[in-house]
Image 1 (cartoon, rainbow, N blue to C red):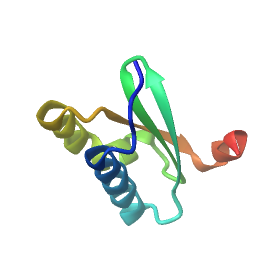
Image 2 (cartoon, one colour):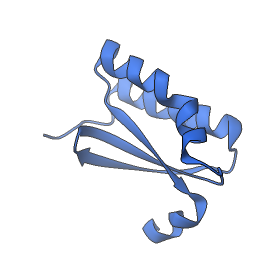
Image 3 (tube, rainbow, N blue to C red):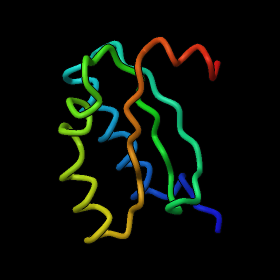
Image 4 (tube, rainbow, N blue to C red):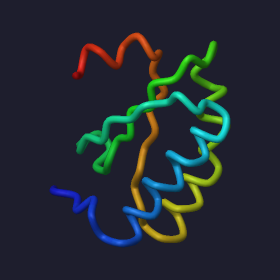
Length: 88
């Protein structure tokens, strides 16, 4: 199943997720990939956070609401900043 990341609702969700994370981690970088388990878009968030849960706490409740109320399936995967080079 293919996901269209460029519809308006998904694009707003991606932008909002990035903004929420950058508000706390201004040097965060991102990579967007399509995933299948579960189907949706995965936003890899590379930060200098000590714990992945610190990043998830910024967006998790909001992402659940988006999924349930609007059918937007965006998943944020917090990763260490050093891992960003592996996907460049």
